[in-house]
Image (cartoon, rainbow, N blue to C red; front, top):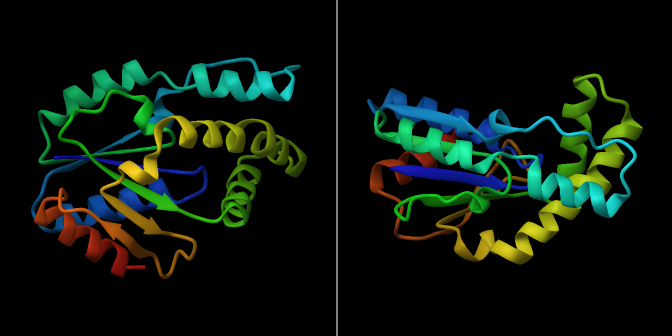
Length: 188
């Protein structure tokens, strides 16, 4: 079983994947997590015009081929493999993979990104620039080209960390994973 956990930057994908892995492990399932952020390429974004920065981020920043290879390797040894990150439908996921999309408002995503990236030592101005010139334009393009919401097996409104809620669930999620999702979301 492979569950891809997609969503905007700042939507809570890493947090949700970690919580879900904990629940699955507690229920006796072997769960492993792959993070798209572990497959970033070192690129120089300096002195780029906004459109060029967004295009470089979208087209080259993530090494989806390396992610695909790691996913194929990891999936052999785990009952459930969770792969979390932005723009996951750009990778060639196995046909049997299910897709969860975490939804947050742009304002909440912006707030979370500011908090997260400033904690890493970036200035508020630099984080705002990345949001406006890189993250949000790339996400808009991704949603137009890949329709993650339309293709999702599970959509979770994650605007409030304490009260995430399932907006839509398709029948493709295996019962043990669906039950683990419910438990993970109830954990708040």
